[in-house]
Image (cartoon, rainbow, N blue to C red; front, side):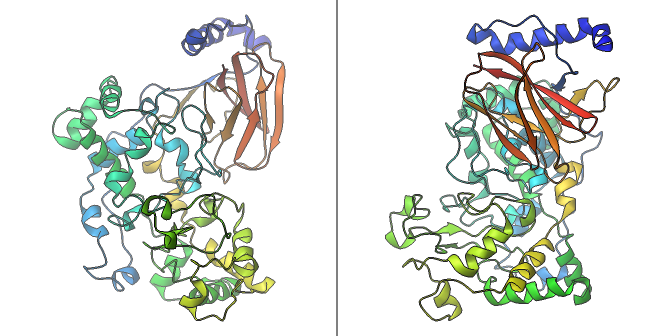
Length: 472
């Protein structure tokens, strides 16, 4: 505590300023106490390179180009429309928390780079804590569906429509179009970014949309083990299990997950259940034949995109393979057996344990760590941390919603650290909640805690990072 006392005036001043901003609307009193660890606060401006990253140099492997033509490559004009300045602006907007009603979440909150631009949870809390009924679809390789059904239920036909919808959704980010313009205009760092991207600093919804489209469309990389095998024409890049899994994949999975993109523009009822609480495609078409039909997402980086299915019902790839092996329901809209000429009644592919493991091994060959780690897709609003007296955790982590009423969620890239102690403390240093985390996303119940400001800390070994949480 002695070194904390030496820095008392700085910590207390910073705490009072931040707490006053959060609490003013709720008339909460601030306890007169200090945190037991340095604060980690978000910076107010993005940290950008002097020259924009290169977003235009997108390499499409020869094996993909050879299997396509101008008719079935509608993604090429969209890739050609990307500019470095436009995507650089889109990156800032993608991670901009000003674009939510309470300024606490961004697009990147629910689309985390290390999670293949997914959320890591079955549903994602919006700005007010309302959890989405569907699993946040990971959006890497979204450019390969530029003018075809987007979202789980296929209700949107273009990326241009898709990118702005979460910002306008009342339960997700909760802004109106005039508010989008006003929020961007209030930040001093946007005029030069808009001028570089569009020639002048005028802010319009269409320009925000265009920049976001360019950034999202740039989320393409073909540097997985599968791509290496295809480009070199050397099957020995794969282990025997991966080779077996690839063969099984071609026999039973490729109709819905076409090699190359490893997704499809079609929507399918795969027999998850007989009565779907979520009607999927039928929810907006009204066609009973569409009941339970959902889009088949890309399997690229699928190992980082848990949980799985439209409602996040499966926690692991092993669970998914077990479903396809033995748990398929004979729904009248499920045509898997018909498409593959399997006899009825069809309950699954009946994989052996060895085959199940082989399929999972093959899906891991679709992991592309470049997309998961390259800074050009990372959050530019990096934490400003005082590292003089401690070693902060070396990854970005998120707390949402904040302020919170009944529960708060904490998440971080599970691939970076899987052994973390999570503490929620009051400002007297008393531990109010504690859990040992072995994954990347956890729910912390807040029932029974008085309103006020708390310190939420993550600790791994000797490393520690702290954020403020307001309970209302």
